[in-house]
Length: 415
Image 1 (cartoon, rainbow, N blue to C red):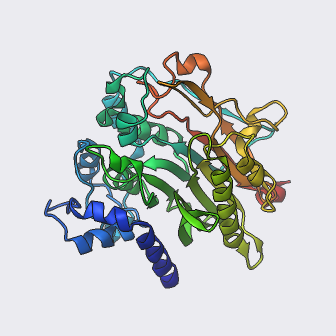
Image 2 (spheres, one colour; image 1 turned 30 degrees about the vertical axis):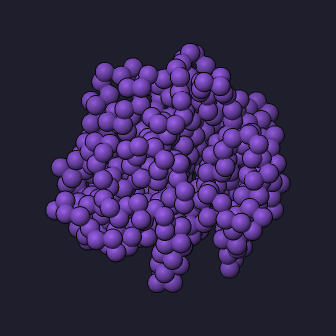
């Protein structure tokens, strides 16, 4: 474990040099509100692989939710032994979210669809993938012309995001465009029993927006009572041997119930048309890292890869993942009648340039070692509404993807 800690810290230090300079001026102590020294601030960012558990102290938990947008993220601290085992009540927090959202339209219920006619196992692994929309980008750069500005107010939008996470209670949660990790997601999800890791973009576009809350990046959370962490690497993806602005987190976990290892990765590839070759190169770089991470002593480690690939299924990077020797398949193909087609959209927005509807988000899984029990259906065009995403009812321009999976040998033992 010592070697892992050194490796992960060194990796994040390399990634975060411009970021830590940004944070040095306003990292505050969570209790005293005294400024933290630049050395302590950069050390805190480098240690972001550990979620700060807030325990059952609801005053600290809800104060994290109540912080205004201009509030600085607190300095990172290790959870105390008593906080490590203490969890906030998710039902109480969900009610808190519902109360905060009482003036917003009711959210549509999304049902789980089972791709096969069988009874799912009692304790599947629930995986959630979601680009939650960075607050600075939503308000300052993305230009959602049909979305009322007050619908993007962080004081309420954060409750919409948390409400959705709490509704589905994933065992593994993969997020992109996270720019409120330290002041919201780390303390709140840590209090609910999640271990969190954050990897910021080296040159986050959020930093170009006035009154931003720091850089955006990828975050990976898992339930500590379900998994233990064996290894973690934060990557800055390369293209043609050159480092790019896109990142990934790759972690090896062990399932506490079965003892099975499981490799989980989250990423966010380069956006916009015209960058297809760069996305393909980034995907190839990530696949190489995944090949190394999944080579176990007793065979390949099962793999889950979640991300906003910014690529339609027709793009080369999608084909690279589908044809990889890792034996990956896409979970959301299970919604189609033939099991071979991706959904028609995972993002749908209206910008000054026009309406944009694309399938960009995926949950890839090792089809030889894992099986999909069910997937969460996507809302219809009518349920999304004419203003598209985001809106008063949808906090992001991307839809969340959720699926339940299990290790195939679990089912074999039952047959």
